[in-house]
Length: 441
Image 1 (cartoon, rainbow, N blue to C red):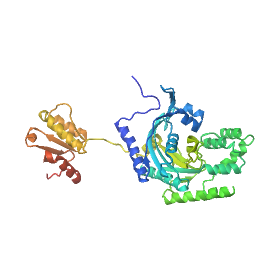
Image 2: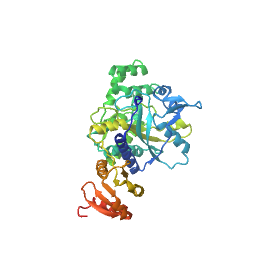
Image 3: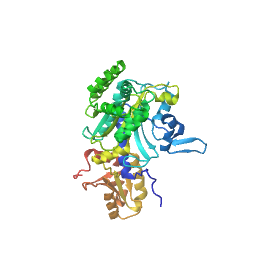
Image 4: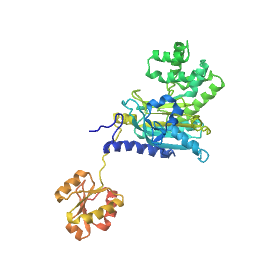
């Protein structure tokens, strides 16, 4: 007996219907925002991820050498692939590029609640526009997706921060450019670590400054008010004042989009990936419990880093299906889909060929139709029709076949009506429009 591999999931019809519900919402809202869907290979050169994230990322990947001797990996994320695609088509693509994808990703990590080794992500990216309107458009898309699932500001918050602000404030504190990446990494992990561990990391990056720097960083992380952030930035000179204006502009745009109730200014969000260059954000349950539901931000230099010759501003975010499903489930917002046929054909064995021709015609007209594959009496077939959940039973017996008609029974109210076979599709559409077969029929 073989079991499912650790960290991988199976999707029987009920679970698959729920997963596809997520996908439908993603697609519907993304298209409303004029984003276009694209797809990419599931297998990529290993170097694509090593170039972006460093050699240590290999421990988190499913990677191997294929039969051609190439080192390849199952994709753990989509941004590097997207960057490569955009760079290859940069001259021919109209800007800005607004693309989205729904796909499976893989990471070789310890399976735990909200995180598996195989998972689906919705990715949305906006490329070619450097201004805050692109950031606002993406955050508005994220807000609208969450709202479409039935989540409100009492359920989720989007914590908004800015890597550029942190760079300015760290510069103001005297942190060198060489020490900056490790310092930002320590800040990013500080919420998940004990203070002593954060101090140790800061000390490693900034000798003899760990404890003092920790206190100053805690003070900055405590700035939860836009006015306080603006005042702090204005003390950083002209660059700080310029960034303060961008903060005010972005918050104004988000208010115009109707997103302000979900947004929380929160500088404790840094995002661990070093390629982020500007505003970043993560969505969490309002209780603060659990993993992030979504996360993203601006990554203006990644495309050039991966392509070597194409420098385009870019921003994007991703939503993971596992944490989102858990959140929706906990709030009873994940619908239970029951997939049933529209029609169940009940016929005698001598009428089977005629019934199959009728069934084929019904299916081609867009109706879901089914029947018993095994010969059975009419009594058993009616029971099977009732259990199937179908709206109508299409009855074709010897007498009906002679008259080139069928008897149609509304399985919800028990009403019946005879109908010529040639008019059946038309009559079904009429009954659907009228809410079923009338009891006076």
